[in-house]
Length: 279
Image (cartoon, rainbow, N blue to C red; front, side):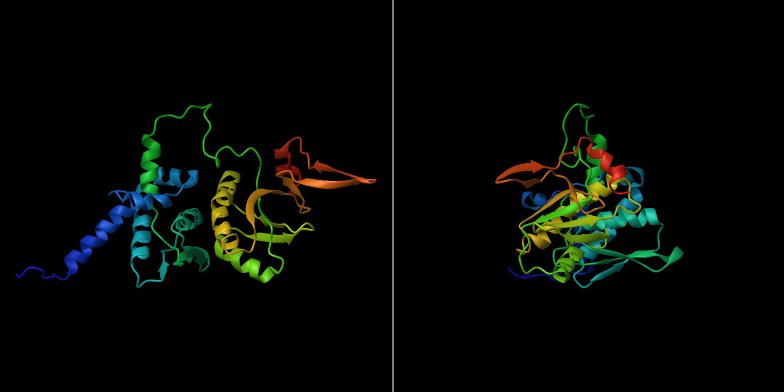
């Protein structure tokens, strides 16, 4: 064989490349340091599922990795599964930046996944994250944890501020649908001061799971709205049934004769809103 001859990759070579890609995706092989920037923060619900049903989760992740890496495939239809499993698929596929939707009624109901331009394999798989969590030393009960674990206020909405003056409902809805990917039902309401409240419905999700999903989807909403210049910022907060912002506190101008003073909404027990404001 002469120097410089290139040997084409045969079927065995291609199979080895696929296995290597899946090993990287599942955390069984190291990536380069440049790839760790997209490490996800998995919800507790997913971590618990990976610990309790590791084989099912790993099989699902292999399917997602293969789907992402196969450039010829745009659609992946998973087998029919019960609601609890479909819920986990919706959550996990969001970390791969896949669009998910449920189709077919009754016992045949299943999940279809679609690729988006920014779909990718996370640098740390759920399987690996679960193993790291289970092997980590017990945390100090008094220690503070990440921002998504120490929320003291209930949240149910995205608070959009600095909306572009010519933004219309149809354009907003299009970008919100792309960001939320059918994971939450919502209602968008313009306020008198130009903010937009996007109030989401909890549905059958537990409170912790609902709020965790809001925190996670905020980055997708920012990507769709802030990076495109439609709004200036996206925050999370609590909006009551009268579409009034309860939290975070927002300063309002109160006219008193010829003087103006700054007031803000006060709430003694923020968690009371869970049982009174959204009945």
